[in-house]
Length: 397
Ligand SMILES: *Cc1c(COP(=O)(O)O)cnc(C)c1O
Image (cartoon, rainbow, N blue to C red):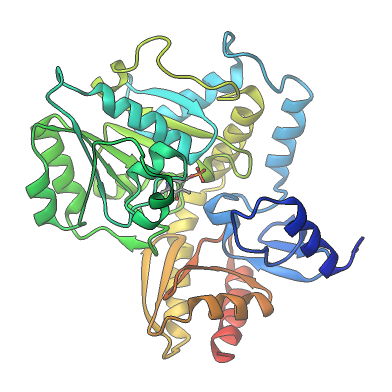
């Protein structure tokens, strides 16, 4: 299988790729279902799914068929034109997000771009200049572009690139901080329903409901970042649905495309009227190829009951992890198939490396959390294999 030696690709990577990330863990060449293989033929059980992207796993026949069919028909047109898959996806997103007739969809190409669009939306909610503040949470992650960096509550990520767009304040994820910060001078509140990059941190009980209440009272846009939690991953189409609330806007990406780059901003009610013609756009956004693919991904999730599977398998996975009885495991956080294993010691990097050497892909979301986000198609066989491989990794530390 290998066309070149291990050291060679590492050197080529170092010589050709911008040094924005750590050296890669392996050279992956093929995937099928919940498994991927490297250039030496080593098999890995993929319980990260490209960070909650490969909803249907790898090389799913529906994904392959949708891409193949659409790329041979019409891949891209300028956004002076509509295409059938684009309209179908916009209508589908309105339905599964629950916007009702007043909802609108703006397509883009990534999570950061969806949040950039939402940032601009927030800037339009000025109430005649009175609303100047945008709130997000400490430790939140909304992407790496300048606007998304301004929104993200991670100062170290932002610091080398200052100044970023202003007007953003970061607050603690507590009811007290929420109540103290929200008033009529706030344009928008951005929230992740589960803070994925922060280490799969759940919001406190009642936080989302109280946020909805206060945002409605003060005319603040509640913007929910569902980039990591959306598309069924937490056992609901979108995580805010667990609380029975509706946001004013939701940002989507990752899992809706199943591997092709697509993002979206979905607005509810009056927020749908804020953008005026010519105020935002993107060349690739919502092109026929990516929207046809997202239709296939979301259609398969729906047809095969994968939202329910995420809820059910998530419960089983939780039990498996707890059942391993390792003294290294302090708690399991998250929801559905987005789980964070909180460790009693800061050894997440070592544990993730040990897992990889036992043929299991998971990731260290921070120094004491392992993030687990398998494809939504995961079944009994994969869970049993996970139990075995994660158990070996834990025991080897
Ligand atoms: C990954 C992520 C983003 C950024 O998405 P990109 O596609 O990498 O730009 C934004 N918000 C959340 C919650 C994410 O998990």
